[in-house]
Amino acid sequence: MPTFPDDPAVSDSCVTSHSAVASQAVNPAPAAPRKSMGLMLWLRDLLVATVASVLIITFLYQPVRVEGTSMLPRLEDRDRLFINKFVYHIAAIERGDVVVFRYPRDPEKSYIKRVIALPGDTLRVDRGHVYVNGNLLHEPYVPAEYRDDQSVPEMVIPAESYYMMGDHRSISQDSRYFGPVDRSLIYGKAVFVYWPARDVGVVH
Image 1 (tube, rainbow, N blue to C red):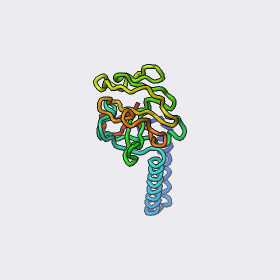
Image 2: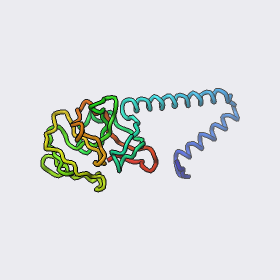
Image 3: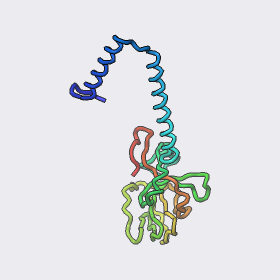
Image 4: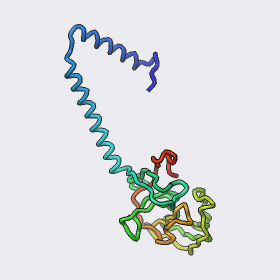
């Protein structure tokens, strides 16, 4: 952190430092106890930081790795990102969220897709154009070159279920193939890509 001559903290530090020198000149203190105390404080801070990190990862955020290209262009194969595992305990899942869920046909696998329709919504796909509740869904996250001409008959999303689609529509295996995803299978929201450096940023 940069310091400035008028910074009170700098002045206080200088005063304390000078007082300590004067005190040592009158009544020198052994160096070993001070070094021991400094080591103890460092170990304490390290322990606190480690425990805090474990708690955050366990209860709030979890690092995951993307495998595949169905969420291009935002998420690339082998991108590493943090998912928030706690947010849906206090907030509702919203249309447009990028979520991680257990694959309905094999819960040992996890998929990452975008929420397209919510429980009770009426959905249909007409030659690649998605309509929710009769309105064409604006999807700026799907580039023209990633669209396809697939259609899905009109359906009503069941209670406690969500319709998922990948942003790379022409290659994504999503709810068009395995149906809406039950709420119980959704366990996180993608929030931030941390690696590689070229992809670092918030997931929208």
